[in-house]
Length: 246
Image (cartoon, rainbow, N blue to C red):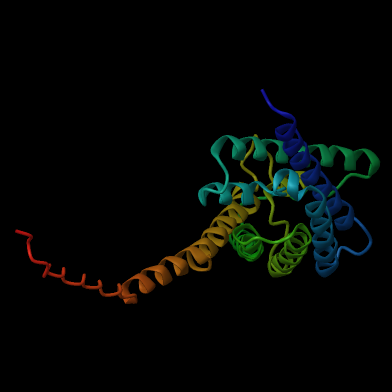
């Protein structure tokens, strides 16, 4: 049913999302859970796994980003659904792995809907997805894509960190247990916020800053100003002056 390339893409999304979630959990529960340090670690981690796995699965590692790319018609429906499922599974696996070697347990962050937190997560994800959209709509090398991804993620986390954890990723938020699939806690903050921010960021860039519209305008302007060369008149046929032979 699935070829080697498709299986590799799913494993890449599972592994990449799991690594990102585990990195977040480890840094957040360290001795220095400062927002800027968390942003630096997360940005470097995303840059590394993007550099390694970008050519395999396009390196989404984020259900909100996958959904936003689906709305922009950059991902087909089946691929988007399967990507989101394996991303959530990767984050879930990272949570249980972290719980295994951190027996003290992590603080439960589930809570009721907080509009301020949702807005912060949405704006941070908008910054991240807007910067990442440039690597999707333009042709860059893998190293440049990885660098842009890491920097955009760092800026997005710092932007959101005043009023939220700054996860900008529903899968990572699942690993943090800020929401759970079978309940309502956190859906409006750490899921809806990033999804809305990613949709706005990706589609805003696609609408205003891609080259397609500019190229069409330029082609139309060139076509309207270019005059066709005047058709050359054919020389008049010479009348025969030869006399008919008798």
